[in-house]
Length: 248
Image (cartoon, one colour):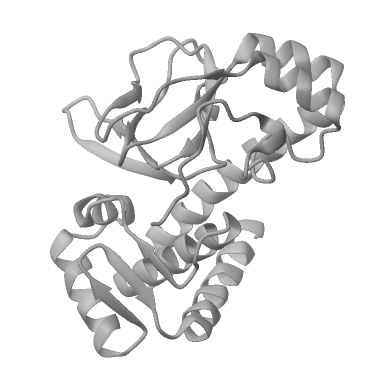
């Protein structure tokens, strides 16, 4: 994915992804107050669990480098991937109304996070209305993405699901200053299939088909988008239809 390594001493004021995280729109004084409560931990290695659904909820986590997947488990032990998270994304919002995390977050590669103790963050948000508004905006954005995914899984064919997924990844990498036309999939094809509700065989078949149609080029985990405008136009059509369905 070509993500930049960041110094462990980084602060909100110098973070490359602050425009996607809580610091967006905060002034220098507010940024300094937020920065003071953040705990920055050492890197987590691939497959390390950041938090699990049986651990107490005390903090939100902002992805600083690397990537994560979140999964939920059923009573019979079946796992469902419910999200993929990249620098600037916040983890833990689904636990705000509970004393325990509602999902398990697992590092997909060597990754780093900023930990935001929620009780202290909530007190800080009382002082700074813009921070509270940004927390609400981040929550709203996450729930909107989950609703769109639910509609996608309920209404769309497998090829439409994968096309939408790849285009959304492309856009998310672009928002973070990375290439939107060439990126690595840090998640496995099995993870993608689980997330989209299709088999790993279907994922492999569709990637081969998209490559034959010259929409993309696949080289192991590397995806090279050859017809970005075509993919974007198709995905935008799906996105607009999903929004209309959500609004109805």
